[in-house]
Image 1 (cartoon, rainbow, N blue to C red):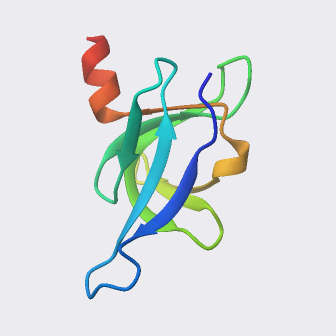
Image 2 (tube, helix red, strand yellow; image 1 turned 180 degrees about the horizontal axis):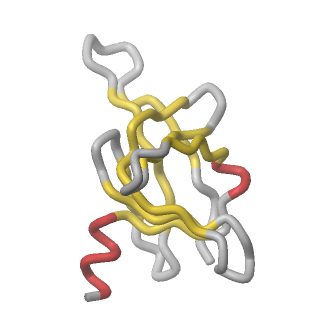
Length: 95
């Protein structure tokens, strides 16, 4: 399982700050996910309840983000409820 998943604002004082989801993988690589990136999120320790899709919104104040799945449904996820997360980059490395 991964460690903490957090959202934050890069370059908060700049004219073009970006919202980012940040986490470390099982192998201690740091990953950043931005709006428009694909990811898969597991919400239970048994790895049975998961959601995958495109990140459509990041709310750094609530430490949460929203994913749009292949059916077009948007789900808001609190980072505190995540058991595991994988970025599109990480998923491609597994193939």
